[in-house]
Image (cartoon, rainbow, N blue to C red):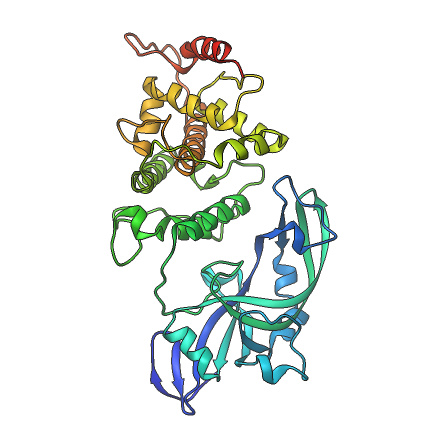
Length: 408
């Protein structure tokens, strides 16, 4: 579609002859899995975290009726509290959406549109305040496929909203902008990306950590030497571990990605620092999550990847168990190699803040499992390890004795 414009503001933004703003080639929706709160879908049973993973397939997103329903729909600043109708259009409209189509190439999983913004306040929010993420408002049907999982179908559009943080993430946003990311929102995005196994979102999160976490001022990006390449068009295998992008049959590629991830997380965790003050929420959260069977099993499984054979004592707190696992691993040759790139040379796991502890524990477990896969695929025989430091298995008895003395 051709447009007439007075000035070009960037690769995808233009000032139109009447002063309006044209935003071309804007992703307004995508296929894949997105995370919903249990309160958002009344008829779907959430998982143990109170959340629901909702899958929308390309057959549904690019259904002719769905694409046609977005054509000409109202563009709003934030989601209205009600559906947009002819009766309230004047109150909510800031522009409209047109030229809706499926993307091509590396955008083939995206619904693309051009957005014409006419309201002065909306133009200011985009150009001066930097708000640029997109969230579509629509009606849809949902079918439960498992506990905490559902599929979405029969999508019919109502409006497209400009929002500070969209469910589809940065991929669905107006281009030509720079963004500032806070610690809390960054960790929330990273958690969402891991849970939905969204490779593109994981890569985005790794490349856009807040500057106060990485030490880079101004850009909010990670050091240029770090290059984590994940192809968003390749679906991640089902039932694989989180951060599954490190699992591949090419051992050299795995090691490169593991090294990059270790460097990334080390920079982040170093900036998080340590403190002697106990987290006041740690004990309360410990009581809550210890009673959650799914979370409990996940922690135990991850601990096994890091320190094979280690067991959670009856009544043991999960946070304390994580500290013990990491500490035990660091005392072994392989464990030190695993953790050094994440937590540095002299970590103090007993004083490590809970946020740093959780990040280190998850990262170490994923890397450990990835390396276990390498060892299984490239196993050698007739090997020996003389003069080695104690292994994880060697320390299991010590750990058991420690917990037996410590009690509950």
